[in-house]
Length: 86
Image 1: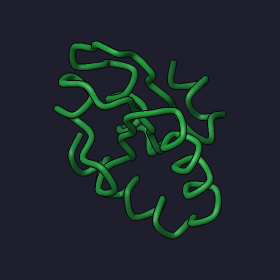
Image 2 (image 1 turned 90 degrees about the horizontal axis):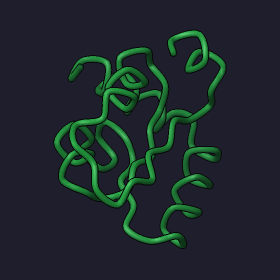
Image 3 (image 1 turned 30 degrees about the vertical axis):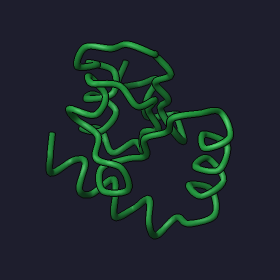
């Protein structure tokens, strides 16, 4: 998966229910920003706007993708924090 994540701009987890996602943890550890749906598993590793983005509905998801695209410095800071966390 590391090679695939290396090509990604974002990793998205849209599960309604999730344990602690290995894919999300791998992405964070490899320095790839994450956008995840709010659920217990995702929120156990992703803190909104600190280590990634957490969304609750489709409209918020779209807004967060736009924010990621338009604010590369913010993403850089979040990726740094995510790598540190992992």
